[in-house]
Image (cartoon, rainbow, N blue to C red):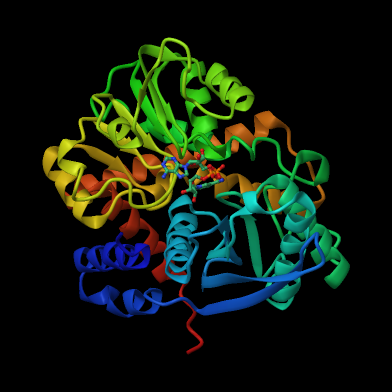
Length: 410
Ligand code: NAD
């Protein structure tokens, strides 16, 4: 399995090579996080015993605003993964042009192995361990894999108790009733859809496309429903265990309801069960990886038949696979652009909390669309000018913005 941080560094350095000598200092600086925190979190279990969980917060860069990025609960979370995700957050907030920096957190835990009360204690304890390094103007976490709006409520509450902060602006991705923004739950999928619409014609795709979606959590689930609602055909969907395929299209609402009832996608009526690996190789217009890193690699890239890969997961494509796909003429809309909708609406939530406002769903959608369409066009144009993949176009735009904002008090 390739190391996501190595992959992130290779992307960064490749963009640096394209930009030339003047970018050397910036690339060196961004090759390391400004601060990395590792914590050992004690949690009292329901049976009275105490277990310890390792947690991380990587604060990569805050030249453009407070560190910003989700917290992941996953048994395979590790520091290199969190480092990669933090670096990508710095690039993502810069590509989106929002006044925030990049950070990421992770806890090594399988949340399904904990009771709800244990999960709450872990979430609160994590905040306690990091309390001096968080805050609306310091570092603003959000949900990521296996972390939910409910977990954000526990975290906000713990932070308020410890630090007296009543704004709620230290965490985004909260439920609407608890200071969350309209449109945050669907923001990553929605943002990805706006990006797709902005590049569809340039990518020579038909008006209505056939789509395969890997992963049906927060991001993949909303993405599938949004594409479906807009008249596109969802031919395949998957979760961590299996995938289903239906030539004339699935209704993602029905698929979600079926999974909620049966606990699995197996046996979904009139659909063929396939593997996650087969899903990636389907002949579709748009492939949406929306699960985890390292899904499209040198082992399967040559077999991909999609015309466009819309990376809603972070880091789903390795650098080796990127080269193969570029040679094959498959467009890869990079994560730092395609899934930026989540952090964009998170920044709206933060702004609303600090100003004590609540924007309507229409205002949120309009602002999100404006940013995603504008930046998607800018990335396309930059990649075109440089004759480079879209990922390099996006990195170069981010690096130009980061270069202008770099701290000068050295
Ligand atoms: P989630 O926990 O809600 O869902 C993850 C999904 O991936 C689940 O459906 C799970 O079954 C599936 N999955 C896990 N392992 C898999 C595997 N090996 N093969 C296929 N499917 C697998 O998480 P999420 O918030 O939807 O995040 C998904 C991805 O999107 C991650 O890469 C995350 O970093 C990225 N992302 C999330 C947000 C956000 O706002 N939540 C924003 C930007 C990017």
